[in-house]
Image (tube, rainbow, N blue to C red):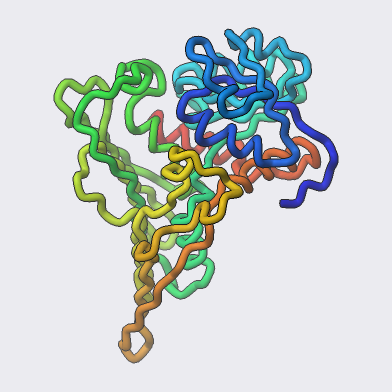
Length: 341
């Protein structure tokens, strides 16, 4: 980690549900450039069990009125991101916002304009760029061994055949449904590799009994040179397929979803613990190539260690050293334009 400054950024976390407990607090605590000062907990007060020195505020207003806090992590329900981002920017805070950033590209642009007006930064929490399995995909692409790319499939599947308890995900409110929940992950991975598609076609479905929101989507993204990408997600897949399938004129690469960080963090593991982010044996990707004589060869592609710490290092460097943040505004606008279309 290249923390080139002694500056400590004081941080406030808007919520301490699964997202705050698993994806944010452990990394803010592990990174030497951040001080997690306060968390909003409206009902159950649990944060101090994990972080005894952290303050627990009863309301978001209290959190935003804390003048020491420079960075606010917005990890509240998806339909509140726009409202809470607006509030934080008007209070003079930099913000790190969970996916989906907003429900529409128009809302996003409004927030960008507001951030510029107040001289504050908006940073996007797109952690799946730092998954171990996705890093292995990048490694294969960078090797050039596939040759000209023909087709790519990305999948993020689950099996949840009942309506979940989270109203903001299951009721037809702004930014609800599977497309807004998992679409930002898959689309951001594609956009980070290949940029904006030249064209796209999207379908959604409602398959669970009684569902009020989409629980299936598939998007075909067209890129130059006849390269097509398909991103798909379903809540009714009992036996998950490969998460990444790439085909090029010289071979194919197949990779299961194998990043273990979420599972480890849920079990209480910390980012600095031995074994953190290391994929289980047998989950390696398979690269199969063919030479000019038609001879096939198979290569096992082991993944690098996955860790979300580089995301927080990028946040730190963006705020302290004004270095470009990996996820740009244009990336997020492209993502939202596809989702809301």
